[in-house]
Image (cartoon, rainbow, N blue to C red; front, top):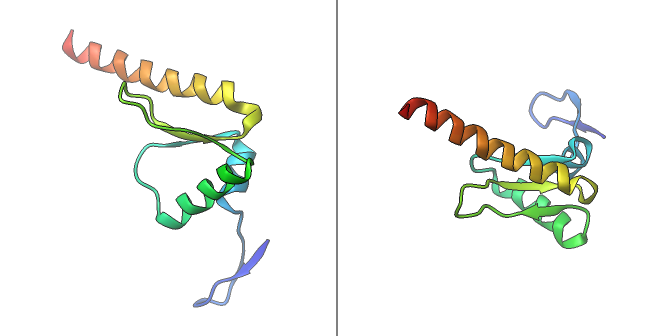
Length: 93
């Protein structure tokens, strides 16, 4: 979709945040994200387009994913946690 920037007047190709998640399969939420982005993603969850894997107390990060890629998203989530634990163990060793 082409969108004209209101200040520069240049046209740019913009994809919605939901389209980006669907294109990649999943998106990790490591830091905070803008409120508008979260609203779009949560609306897609309510519509059934995306799944949300919430952040957990045991160190798993929040993720949004395409329902078809839920297993891949969970694997990436666990891999990130494992890599963090490995890094901590190397520092303490």
